[in-house]
Structure formats: C-alpha cells, structure tokens
Amino acid sequence: MTTRNTIILAAGKGTRMKSKLYKVLHRVCGRTMVDCVLTQVEKIHMDNIVTVVGFGAEDVKTQLGDRSQYALQEKQLGTGDAVKKTADILENVDGATMVVSGDTPLFTAETFDHLFTQHEESGAVATVLTSKAPNPFGYGRVVRDDKGNVNKIVEQKDASVAEQHIDEINTGVYVFDNHELFEALKKVKNDNAQGEYYLPDVIGIFKEEGKNVGAYQMKDFDESMGVNDRIALSKANQVMQQRINEYHMSNGVTMPNPNDTYIDFGVEIGQDTIVEPGVHISGNTKIGSDCKIGANSEIRDCIIHDNVTVTSSLLEESEMMEGSNIGPYSHLRPEAKIGENVHLGNFVEVKKAQIDEGTKVGHLTYVGNAHLGKNINVGCGVIFANYDGKNKHNTEVGDNSFIGSNANLIAPLHIDDHTFIAAGSTITDDVKQYDMAIARQRQTNKPGYFKKLPYAD
Image (cartoon, rainbow, N blue to C red):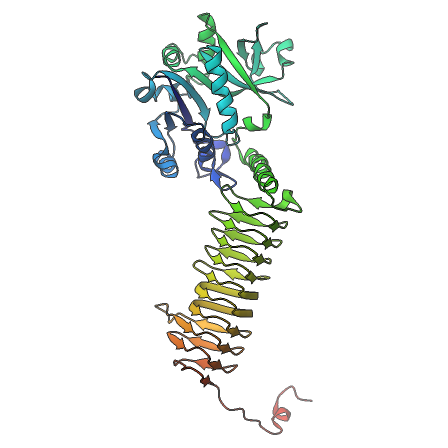
C-alpha cells in the first residue's frame, strides 16, 4: 500500500532571530511556527509524520507531543543530512514523502494536498512546490523544459541573465518518491563552502539520471514566506492575522478595522458579534453571538456567552453568562464566573469568584474568593478582603442583599440573603437574614476646631 508521509525540518537554532527561544517555537497568532506547519499537514491525513529536531529538541517535543514521530540531528550538517536522519522510520516505506521546513508557518493544507496530488498523478520522482514571486531576487529560479518539467533549479548567484528574469521560484518544499529520495541522499556530497549536505542536490542527481522532476505552482506567494528573523516574523503574523480575521468576517463577525484587531488561532466567535479596533483575543476563547467587544479589550482563555458587552477591559480564564456586561477598565482574573445579566462597571476587579444573576457591582470594587448571590447591589469602593497574610478565605453573600459603599468584608464571612451592610462598615462577623450590619464609630463634631489648624485663615 502506498502512503503519504511528511518530514518537518525543525532542527535549526535560528541565530538570526537573536533569541533564547528556538526559531520554530516563535509564535504566529498564538501558535508556534512548527505547530502551524504540523496542523496543516495533519489536515490531509498523513500515514507518517516525522519531525527532525536538534537544538531545543525537548522543547519542540513538548510542544508537539505525540502528534509526530521524531528524528534527532545532533550536528547541523544541512537539510540533506536532516532528511537522512529519518531513514530508520521512513526508508523502507512505499509512497510519497513531502519535506517542509518548520519555519514556514503560512502554508495551507490545500496547497500541500494539491502538491501531493500533482506528484501522484504525474509519475515524477520528485515534485517541487513553486510560486510566482513579485520580486524573485535572491530566490532559486525554476527552469522548465518545453514540456513543463523541471530542467533545473538555479540559485541567484549562478543564474544567467535570462534565468534571472524567471519569476517562478523554488519554495523549498518537495514531494519525493520515498525510495528514490533515500537512494539519492546516499549520493549527495558536501563539497561546498559550508561542508553541508543539501537536499536540493537530490533534484540535480535525478536530472543527471534522466528521471522526471515535476513542479506544482501555487497561487499565493505569501504562503512560501520563511521566517528567519523578527522582521519576517512580524510579516508572517500580519499575513496570518488577515486570514484569521477574514475567516471570522466571512462567518458573520463585524470588524470595523480588521487591520487593528488581533485574534489567535482557534478562537471561536458567533454571528453578529462586533469586535472593535485594538482588541486582542487569544488562547482557548469562545465568544457567542450578538456580543460587543469594545475597543482595546483583551480576552484570554475565556468563555463569553451571547449578548455580552465588554468595554475596554481585561478578561483572563473567566466566564461571562448571557446578557452580562463589564467595563470600562475592569479586570476579570482567573476563575471568575459572571452570571446572567450581571453588571460590572468601571474599575471592578473579580478573582476566583462567582457572581449570580442580576447582581450589580458598579465601580471601584474588588471581589476575591467570594460567592455573591442573585440581585445584590454592591456599592462603590467595596473590598472583599480575602487574604490574612498567609491564606485566602471565602466570603458568601446571599440573594437580594445590599452592600453599602466603602464597606470592607473581612473573610471568612457568611452574609445571609436579604441583609443590609451599612456604608463605611468593616464587617468581621457573619450577618443573619434581615439584619443590618453597621460597624463604624458614631460621628462626633468638634466645634471651632477648624480655627486650630495650621493652614486656617
């Protein structure tokens, strides 16, 4: 049985990135570059996927897990040597094998599938993925014969004047007959300035042996972008972000300015939701329909149900139920769960707390390690004091209670439903149903005291 196989080259350190992080682990729209490549490869159902690792091998394996097999290239001796390291896994496999670099995050599954199909239908021993380049300078040119077969691939420095005018370039992705590939690799030499074994030399070997080498020209040149430095990484992010935003807009999401809207891979957004400029949505975030995500909000790893409004706020690892709203300038920290039709106003911070249906927390309030029931009114400047210097403690507030402004609730604390906390109180004891708790010294006025002050006129 013939198979489809892929080798992902991910062994290089990437010194031009000027980074402690290995090149293929730099992220494009929230996903590592090597993961971007693997994800597209997976979509066309490979029989074998082998990732060649070297620098940062364990970090790459941690990122990709058991989605791939691995081969180790301990010394960086070129792309041909890297492919040879997969011989123990692939050398005796029948079928076709694609070789792609782990630093090319923009290729799509559709392009890979077309490349395989072209190769399988042509009967060629190798098929080169090519593209028309707006400016081909610096790329290897693909020289074809009059039948459209690849005659040779010539590098910029070796190209004649006529060849330099060719705008079809080699993207560095190939599909090979698997047996032919490993036989040719045995003949590749390293008699070059770098002393390395180059995979493109296999194409020259095939041509010398009179074997047919084909090419598939893809439509979108941007897909072929390799990332070798931070400038290219930025450009790759821009291209990928445009794809992601266009996907969401085509599925019914409104973006007034998609060029200033940043959404990661895997984010889900429902129809008729508006995402305003300056918004960052990342991680495993799901946003429902008919929501409004206001300008300059940031949402990470959250679940946002239908008809939710987020106004210029930061949300992390939290959930907002249908009809709730937050902001401006508020913060949901991890494990905040906001119920239906809850209102969180400006400068409200919630951490590891549940707030039930209809409760209002208007402004300038911190709610930590707490459970607030339904239809509670929390006044301005309320503090749920949850930390004693060593441990965190919980506060429970029952339904239909009223928490007056500037109250301090010192946990652990249980406040029954239908209770009233007087403004300015520091509450340390539990409060029973229908009680009002007041904890402040009775006001005393000192007649004429103003005249004793040093700044008094």
